[in-house]
Image (cartoon, rainbow, N blue to C red; front, side, top):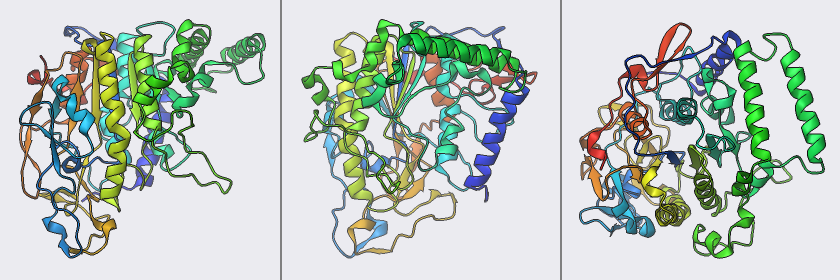
Length: 495
């Protein structure tokens, strides 16, 4: 069993990033003999359930066992009853009623299998999900969104091709998350436009408070001149410096573009705003957690992810190419349900159910769903008993009593990598389809049609018109957009 630690991961991932910046070999697209598939989508939206969303508590419910003191842990498969969806034969977990009503617009994968990465760390599995590669790598692997941004370019020159909404890097495992929220060797211009607070997105496309546009322009030009005149190596390689200059030009172009209005949620009608917020959340209030005086952070409030989904809709309308909206990964919060698994899962489902369903409906109403691919995913699943996989268990990170006497032990607490769900809408994906199957009894592992990260990425790239065998040259060798070019799109997922 691997003993690769979080510190080891951070050290190697950061080293790869710095190494790419220092070496700075110009990359080039290796497209000879590679035929791009016909695209079924122009925009990709990833709705990221960071922390490990339990499949048996969401989109793959099993036998329901209500809480009572004295329950045997091994007897609990699902802590919510199942509900019907708009598709016969597909049931969801209670708390996802609105998503259940739009299931006829999408495909549900129940057989996603996370990678075997040894001792389970969220940051390592999230790195693999977002880059397609298991860490550590000898070069800085680019994020899925950066590959799409570099390969396809922006849909609108004024709109960032890759926008990331909802993740902060100044709390929790921020440094580990930074390791894959990057364009890596592809260059700064293809990296994410970061919006940690969706209700403050408009501030990201305006000059700093109190600074006139003219003064902001002067400072921008001064910084560009200093950067251009600095010695090679001070800001990375010549290629990386040029990429940074282009990224600054792109940012400045956005400031003066009419598309900047899409970032301003205050322009959205109140009734529209309310449709993206959980029931009972007041649309007239701010919904973001703020740092308190003692430096700690208050518990996340219920509306932040919904505002991110609304922002994603607005950005899709003005031509964004790749958007990720996250419930945010913070250790031991949100989907990272090491205790109080049942109550926390109920809270998380309340956060995501209404806004995801509304995003699907709004894009459909605007005629955009057919060319927009929405992906709902998480790094792995959870189980009450098994850590890892039934045939490849790893060290338990949570103590679960054999007999449950307290509600905090009722729910899915351990990391489970042998099955998970991915929900797909729009973008040429088949409607009302179920793909893959898991066992009805513990261990609730996949038993039909396994889907790896390589094949999932190949499917997403194919939908966007990018060959899974496409490669970029870095350090005089090919770096494929799917691991070693081995990803294969799943044809049954397409309409």
